[in-house]
Image (cartoon, rainbow, N blue to C red; front, side, top):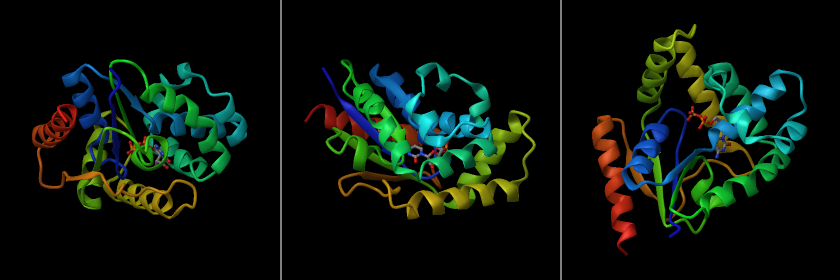
Length: 203
Ligand code: CDP
């Protein structure tokens, strides 16, 4: 059985938490595609050229905790505007999506560009203030040196760059189910996503 779930949305909307929970619930594999761009961004910070970094990316590059910083997030959104960088990452994502047993991919362009035929498409969003507050708590909780205002500025800057870029801009697919998590608990957001996937699975 192959079943692909595409979960897109802006920075810190809860895609990661929801994707992991959906994958665990249905026994699907999960790919956080943001990590691909973060890993390329981290290599660029280390001195490599973006296109070379994307073309030589190895799955083991994704298992680095330091990819979760705000600095790497910014670098990720800067390399993500480069068409050749995006092109170099397509095959890996599509192969993952087609794996036997079901797959959840979360990112910005999964339902529009990477898997336009995905069985389920969700667009998870929340107000910028909510998203920044959550991301601030997450990063501060891990001991990162961040301020609420700095995290809000980071989130807004990335949203702008991600939605205005020419190559695979962040936009909800026409057939995506919108989930606004601003006033939802994690449990409610996860339940909404599981219900959408469950419905598609039986169709
Ligand atoms: O976790 P968060 O939502 O803050 O970001 P992420 O999903 O790790 O993505 C980091 C950056 O990678 C985004 O700001 C995008 O610029 C880029 N990205 C993308 O362009 N396409 C994707 N499918 C996933 C991420």
